[in-house]
Structure formats: C-alpha cells, structure tokens
Length: 197
Image (cartoon, rainbow, N blue to C red; front, side, top):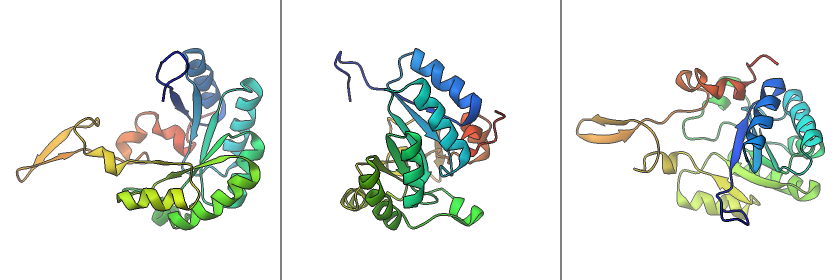
C-alpha cells in the first residue's frame, strides 16, 4: 500500500517496555506509518502498558499488537489503545509455542472468537499463523480476519530473504521462527520480553 504521496507504507516492529518505546519513537521519527508490538504472548501486562504509553505519546499512529487467542485478549489490547490485534499462538508452520509453553488454540477457532470480540471493541483482526494452503487464507477471512500474515508460503520464493541451501540436488531457503536461537541473537529477544526495561 502507498500513502497519499505515493510512498510505500511502513510498519515497524517493536518490543515492550522502555526499549520498545525508544525504538517506536525512533522509527516514527524516521517516517514509520504504523507500529507493531510484536510478542509471542500479547495478552500480558507488558504489552498492555506499552500500548497505553504509545497511544499517549502518539495518539494518531496505528498500533498493531499481539499475539492473542481469546476475546479477553482482544478486549484488553483494544482498551489499551490497539488499532489492530494479531491472532494466533502456536499456529505457525515452525512455531513450537503451543507445545513448549502449553498455551495456544487452533487457529480457526481463535480467529472466530477474536473476530467477534474485534467487532465488539472496534478493532481489526489479523490472522497470524496457520496459513499452509491458499484455502487457509479464505477460511481466516471468512472467520472474520481483516487480513492474514504469511510466512512459510512466501519463505521459499526467490524474492524472499534467506540463504539458499542445496541438499541432495534440491534448493531450499533457510527459514526460522522468531523464537529460534539465531533469531533471538538478533532483535527477536524483545518479542519474548527478555529485554531489560
């Protein structure tokens, strides 16, 4: 999408707490059009507090927050000031959150529940995870999502970033989850609220 001047719209991901707030201020000053508070478990005090602080500092900026799987999560993030709520815990193709943490919900059920809450509280829902086939996009939209996030469907494309690995004569792209060790060594640690505030 483009803005009224023909420039690409940009959303920047931030973590929670003071580090997330500092990063948000920097990327907004640099021209970001929206902020995404990106955490593995979005229905938490840290996320709610960060949304409230961002909304107070930047009343006009769209805030995308998540991830949640319950109507209560949508309610709390909306009440804090989120414009859009990401739905999905453990549904991604390489995500192990549901197994490791014992938390999560089947994606279609989560989208149905959260979309109803989104309508009630006036926020849009983005289905994040569980899109393995093109038909899954249709199901998520039919369940009430306004949009979907795609990972594995796009990860192997030539245009996608990542190292090409040749194994037994076949080409593959490196694809990792945000909770993987290699991602956590970068900025992904904020997603798991390990950064000091």
